[in-house]
Picture 1 (cartoon, rainbow, N blue to C red):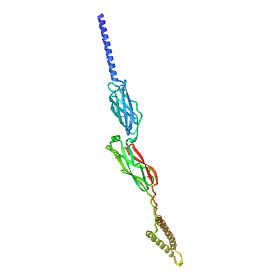
Picture 2 (picture 1 turned 120 degrees about the horizontal axis):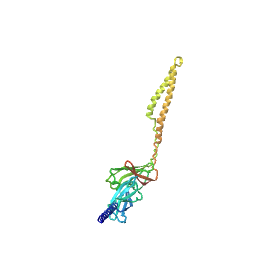
Picture 3 (picture 1 turned 90 degrees about the vertical axis):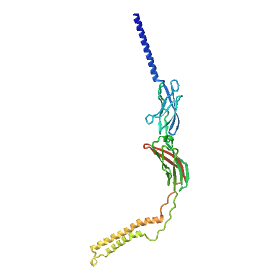
Picture 4 (picture 1 turned 30 degrees about the vertical axis):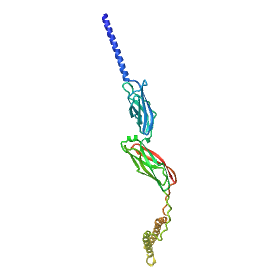
Length: 339
């Protein structure tokens, strides 16, 4: 009995030891799978055009740097977009430059983790705002011009796309140039009116802008009317006048025997009166439609043209493009002085 008890006790001890070792091994495997907790921080640096400089740092629970990939996520317009990625160096840091579109962005850094370190996500940086100027800018040279009314001046308008914007182009972009704010009797023209941004464009695209003004024209001298009447007026007036006069005289001579007025005579008399009335109307009509405008033109002539008003004006030059959904407009101003 004692041998049996001892043997059973040994078996129980071996079984318990095996269970303990298995539990310990399982705990090690679980701990290894979970890894060490990490902390990821994201810092925003300088902004230039469409790009934002960022710095990512990741450390473990002991403050030691870790390695592995990190990404930059952007909560833009309610979505979650990955805008950049990099690998941590030996110090657990990564310098990233992210290209962002126009608008406000909430950026976070995400550490993917590895076999010994857990993944982690940084707190979002202060919202980064990108202005539309990151696509292209517009400038003018010179920025001030002075001229006398009647003169014109030429300036150069430059449209400069950013390199980051050019890298995103999959098709040409046409930018239309226009101006506003000029005084009355002044205009601006562009050659060319549109410039084309291509994926191979380098540097600025230029257009020649000509600002034109107007001088006052002298008052036209009065023209002395020609002697005599217009042959065209007489060509209409004489046949009608002679015809109506003939009807009137004919109506007077139609009388019946013994001086009695016949029915035909009465009709002729009324016809003569109507003819006289039409004759007077014809003469009046020709006088109002032909003589008066002719008299005004011969004696007064056309009105003089006014000059461009003197003064200093702030003129806005705009460069506008569209991708079919949203329009991009960049502006600059210049001073135009008219003497």
